[in-house]
Image 1 (cartoon, rainbow over the protein chains, first blue to last red):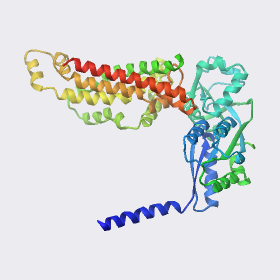
Image 2 (image 1 turned 90 degrees about the horizontal axis):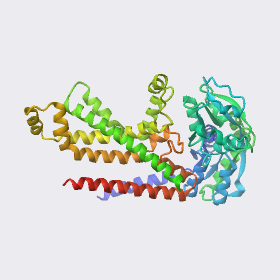
Image 3 (image 1 turned 30 degrees about the vertical axis):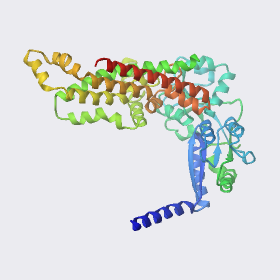
Length: 250
Length: 220
């Protein structure tokens, strides 16, 4: 029995020391940042050998909810200021670290082989457009940007019947790629990822600029390392990665 | 308030329709596979049980690929019958029925298999055709097990979330089931709406289970 206990304690000791050796950052970022941030994460790990960056991608409001309920997140990057404001209101992020690091463009996209020719938003009212994918405005910034534009053009109510609500902007992109919907609102960066399946019909002029804020969380246990990650995002290297994916300057 | 009741009524509609479908389909499959053994019957039995062990999102993906506009079943349905299943409540019924089917199937197989063969043979000796044997002897003796399986299937259909989320589109009044409504309310930070929906759903489920329990009891 004593030998078993010894092996068990040694094993436990090794497990504990193994995890203490390197620092790990948990970054909660908006779904549209998936590819760009994974690339930045790889760059960060190259510059900080031994440290790891783990990502959690979802709709921005969902991420705020998770942090509010105690998720051990170090960095939060959202796709609009409204989600970040929710985080500020809930005292979830360190306001001094908040920084707008990128911009984007909202586009109306259609499946690649679609016969539709849409030149303005009003064209969505045509009989041929039966299903329009839009992310849930209550939880997804992309949905909010789209709704604001449609409200301004007095089209929201008229098109209501045709909306298919998705959980995040990548699900909208997926429905477009599969041809399940006739049109959908995604970011230019998302559409660019699936050029073979999705075509941009027109660029949507949003009522306010599409801005991506990033901040360190108040509950972060690696605040110093988190700030270094944000520094990388702000730096020339980080910005060029973002621009490579189609994000615009903040 | 009435807004919050819409997903509940929609879910009940979907769950009842799905349960009716799987009751007939499950008992029929259980009868055929139990009565006749042919090459491949084991494989079909495994396929019938598969949705029960598969993660719902996997099933949702299969349904999306099969019934989507470009899917092999979906494109045929759209071209020849003009039917679209994705983003409709009928699609949600298919999703719920798929996950609930094994529950009725397995329960029916076990119950029908447990019926005393002597009683069935006695009926045959007395001149009853196979249909009469099934409806007048086998099924009445097996109904308790089938009923239990059906209640489980109904509960599963009401709680279906993963597959529905992938193929439904969360359209209020058409495909936003109670599970999806609760999920979205929580995500949007509308905790009071979520609390109300959860309490309401729990109450409805408890009532249904209590009523079915009473139904089983009364027969004794």
